Length: 308
Image (cartoon, rainbow, N blue to C red; front, side, top):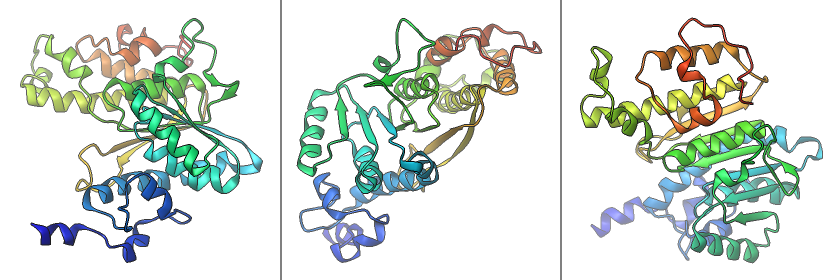
């Protein structure tokens, strides 16, 4: 067993092969992704692969956000330990002297620990707020875009935000009109729960009749709906694997870039999809497109979703 573990550990002399340009081992040691002697164990390597690959995929978008002396605000929704936020801060905010990473996390112990790390590293614009993602969305005025300290949100990222927390991140990005939204969903149980109470109608009902199929079908349908919602609000959406499946089973990346105000065709396609399913009061749909599930197939809705 010891020999097997040693083969999976990347020695300090080879760790540089796993790093992005300008990425330091000092930060990774602060995050406990590297051991004190600079080695990278198997679990940390899998985690670093995911973080770095997402950071790398975001490079073209971040280049645009940081161009022309801009001072962008990046929101890490459901930040947890803040691994992704710290990496983005080092690679972009620290190097350019501009930009802020706002990390939203509800667990007080994680917030306190991350604030200590940011202070030790001198990351003055690495901000941790003990808030749920939904708290950044104005409750009384849905037409008013979310802001932080009077600053607009330029990008929303969420790596493995659990279940409907990913939907909260998507809603935050849409309401903010953020140019970039990137989410890697974690567990997705909402639609499976909703389908569990529906009558099984042939032939489509066979897709969710058995609990294991209902869970997998529900997770896939959730991400399909998320992609359609983003497209309906004017985002160009790419859905792909984040890394190889050997690194994580929670591996689907939804990357959205704002290209237009609204997309009527995408909205109609979403309505047609929902019309062929049992009524699904999914929270994201209820909040952003409450009329979409009720629209009949073949209707011609306005290009602009009515709630925003």
